[in-house]
Image 1 (cartoon, rainbow, N blue to C red):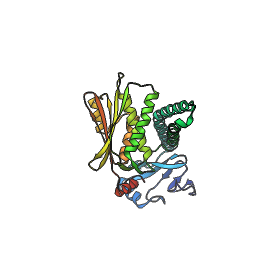
Image 2 (cartoon, rainbow, N blue to C red; image 1 turned 180 degrees about the vertical axis):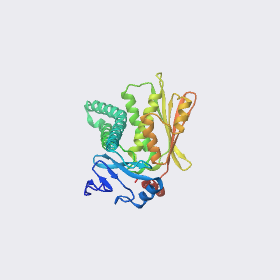
Image 3 (cartoon, rainbow, N blue to C red; image 1 turned 60 degrees about the horizontal axis):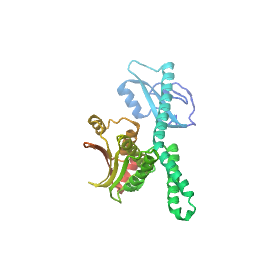
Image 4 (cartoon, rainbow, N blue to C red; image 1 turned 60 degrees about the vertical axis):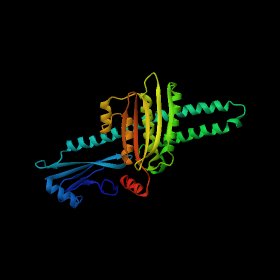
Length: 318
């Protein structure tokens, strides 16, 4: 609390040192900053001093690094404190870069799709009778506005968790499929066929719509990249499966068996798959991948909405 409380006086005292960069508890058994739990831990584990380093983002402390001087080691040297506080700052730099890379990774397809719909809208404006194309023009402009807002939110709020609500998973799947379709057209990939198989409406789930869209965008992006140069197909379907909302994304092209085993074990590699897995974990869903002789199918399950599910997810994300 002393690092979070700006009113707490900074200084070097007999049993603790409080600075803006760190807190050093010189004697955990005598310091006023020690609670009963820390004192018990110190006695049990022969802890002589404790160093706490806050990890800040925009002046907000999100995490702490905690180091213990134990057994024969009585205290931290000034050089060690300087080194460990520098280490904490470098961690925050790395986290900022990681989030920035996530954002840049997710900008690609939506921004390409926006460009495609903008070109279509401009083409419609060349029509002599705009009344004939009013509905189609309104549709394109609506998509452009929504996707632009999404990109703005992605830049400002790069976190998947939060702002959860009830959404129709099938509708989100269809909308992101449309965006991916436009991105494919804009990239001049004319040898890819897009197929909507059976899509069951009313698959309501409780999640972050933003996080769900990001996961789907990355699944579609991976599916598109996996299609061989000679071309192929991407298809989607959705349905109920044993109390869960389920969707499948299938693409032409296979992935090595060892990669499938890694995915099933959760040993994912690549920024896109990490974004997908973080979303699935946040909603207590699951993912699996299947291959045939010429195709790969990613199958994702998300719990169907009920009030109990909403409360559980909200509590877990607090």
